[in-house]
Length: 306
Length: 322
Image (cartoon, rainbow over the protein chains, first blue to last red):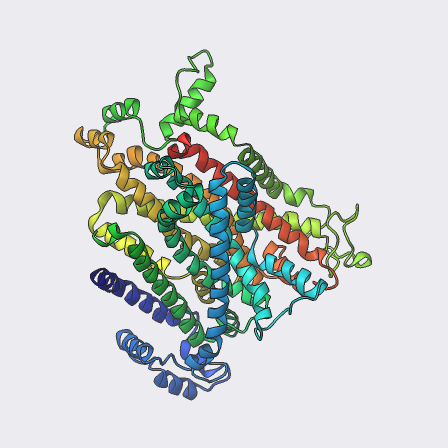
């Protein structure tokens, strides 16, 4: 097991390096001179030259990359051009609201999605299946921002049950996490169903039934664990989707998270913030996929020995 | 090129996945001359059609998609009002009526006309970005799967890197570099469609390249080019087609999302996501302004998803026994 984890970690290094390189090059791909961008529009040539030296932009690209990489490893991501605060502080304030939102959305959507998927598979081609799958295909077809607006209009504006914007109490989490999780719940439901339908036709399930086990035991004990294998993989992929989706949902609900920060940074051309955010988002995504791989190996021992 | 090799291979060996070019050819032949024994010869194409027809929901969705494409093409000729420059100041925020089917927005523009024109943008964005992604991805997947070795490692590493960014984050990064606007959004969405297709096609290629008919082609001296294009590529088409339809839905949503957060189409362009963003400010007073663009995106994406599901059920040989 340990060997497997180590192997996966080592396998990540090239990907991480290339991701880092791309994010580093991002600044150089921006139209215009990054030093001038950083110095501001009305800076004198002398100031621009100073800023260039200060940011190390006068050095060769490999040297700059080395500097960037050491900075990143020390948690130094430069300063926001807009607020002049260190980027790590800017993002630090915004990190938790986004993480909690993602976790809240993930938890409900995985549980509900799997329940719908299992029910649909057990009652395949009967009304619970039809209902569940209709809900699911609608869920993947309804864009999150539209759903967010609809939910906000109904529950916050018309009925006045829940707050509209902000992230202060648990009530603030309900609508955004519903919005963010809807598509994931839908995808999980579809995926769990098809995985379960396959499993329920396996020989060992027939054996379990033949030896007189109750249907509940067959479904839960023999079906669930085996059906979980592909479902866990899907869950990992969906986490990445949630990270991206949170950006849009944060705009709708004016959520003080990383997504809003990213959008504002793009508007203001605050490139150190953009750079760090993209790096963080992809790091998070890579880590989640690693965790999923490990989980996968825990559930399915045959994977470990490949 | 070696024509005799193709004949040997194409005629008798059952291909693992349906819908190859030969199949399509013989289907048209059969249609031209109905006297032929149409019942006993089941081409992959007719087989597909036989199964697809039974998926009533998917057929309806397919018809809807065709209708939508037709509307998008003729939209400029049939819209009742100019979508961007006609302002009916007497009926600002008006609810749907006979004069304005979907009502009027806070600036006095006819929402129905804007939705129709928006269909052009959304369909174009969805279709072009997935087409580019599918083309490039399929080419990369064929190369990686067929040649293996270094090609495979480099291409798959590239895909891993693209996969390492959640889709919309990658798109935002690209838009930050290239600037906003619909064209750049399409470029961004294309780029992140590539790795999915590359992986899909690579997997199929790996499965196909060791089959007997491919080895037969190789043994009679067919070039790599012929083998890949004539014997392996057709076997991957089914999977690509299914994915294509399902991806278009996702791409339309992504493009609309980017417009919604202000990075894609800019007002007054009647892009559905951008329209929703504009409608946000007036949600309290005129919710109908938001309802129609939402419905438009939902129904369009739903149609593509249902069509994709139907194609999958009709093309996937595994589904047959269930």
